[in-house]
Image 1 (cartoon, rainbow, N blue to C red):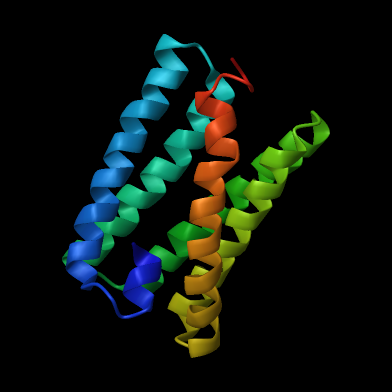
Image 2: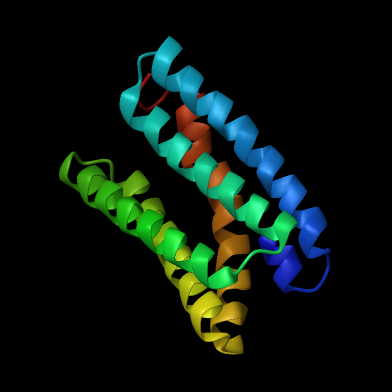
Length: 150
């Protein structure tokens, strides 16, 4: 949704509501994966992304200072890089690759929010759109099909 916002196709406040709602659904799914299924690693990763979406959605809804959000995203990007390294160490290279891809998204959004330079916004909107679809199609499928962690 934020990619579409950067493309100028949706209103920031409306995008914030959709992103927040998607994050809430992700939070419920992550908690279920963690608690009911006992899958700590994927559950935690889903929770990290869900909290990211909820906070970013709230920021957009309320029109809060984007620099504060940038520093929060920097923190989550670092967490994502740690996940990427872990997945590489245990041989889950698909998940490591996607965590690095999302780390790049976080980095681009941080640079866009802190500097206001259009080059970062342009890169962020395209890379985020590609990664969203790819993440749903590849690691998302592996998780929900039970082929990984199941």
